[in-house]
Length: 151
Image 1 (cartoon, rainbow, N blue to C red):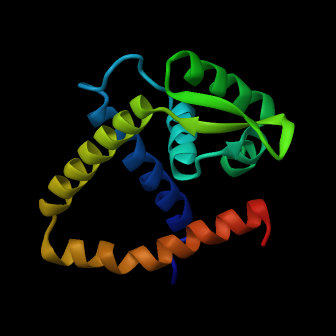
Image 2: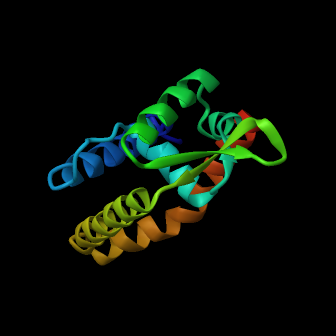
């Protein structure tokens, strides 16, 4: 019989891992300290330079005015630049600054080192089980995305 608590336990563990990674990486990060949504927006803009605020809001499942507030904060901090969209002069395109790219690269490098270190402490069987679970986790993420965004 399947464990009925499994979905809740999975969600709790995944959220806990993310929270613990952020907590472990927080010391040593440059100021100002960025909130989770700010980092998510920076990562999205770095992955998709030129994205519009409305598209970023949809991608992050946030209200447009919330993303505008984040953009204003990140722009003042020197991490985002806003440029008028040549295709629609009423819209703005978002671009990461070099400072943002540098900060994200440092964070990703530290995150990778931390996770590699912790995974190396697991048994071979545990590492194999986690690796075997990756396709199912990717599918779960895909399904969640499809149900939120549509095909």
